[in-house]
Length: 123
Length: 123
Image (cartoon, rainbow over all chains, first blue to last red; front, side, top):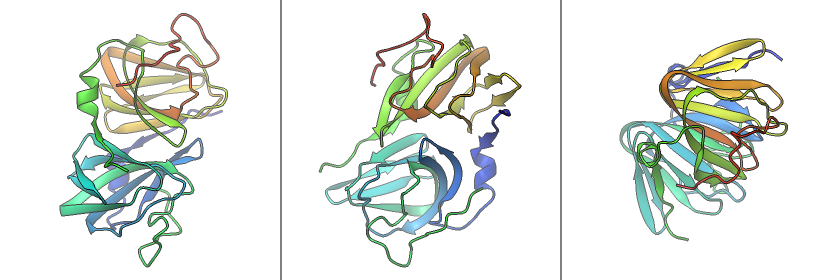
């Protein structure tokens, strides 16, 4: 077994510029670590079987829920349980974030639609 | 369903000072998010069934493997696959890190011994 490699978040974020297209940067225990850059509003959606963690590394993520909202700043995370409708929003500028979720997770959940990304790039 | 809460890493790190005693700060999909402060050397160990992610938020983590080593700085992470022997070390001062691993993970893995923590605190 060779020595495992390490991953620099800053280096990986430097490799892409597109929004709402999560990139896979790590896998463990059937889960994936993804990085995403977002701007503006995403679609309302929920995931039937997956809880999702969002850890913000740049900007402030607004996460809207049907009965409230949270603003998540740098160094903060939120866990959205399965079945809970949510809408991620970057109100001003870009938000960079790390996602931690099962490998089966589709970005638009059960909502589907044109913003669904089916083949995630690995960085 | 009420609006999920958010978690500030800095706030949670401010709640404890002990070393080598991971605190649970989040749970999702059978996995746990833990925070740990470390200083000096830990025991060599491996986990039979669990892959482990270490994301450093302060200091530099030295991770020794039987055939090499990695130094993981702030904003970097490493994934140690199940079965791979490793020894986490904070060479100078404290290292603060976020762990992501299955809820079943025991800190000393199959090595056991006096540094095993069986009841993790939730913050």
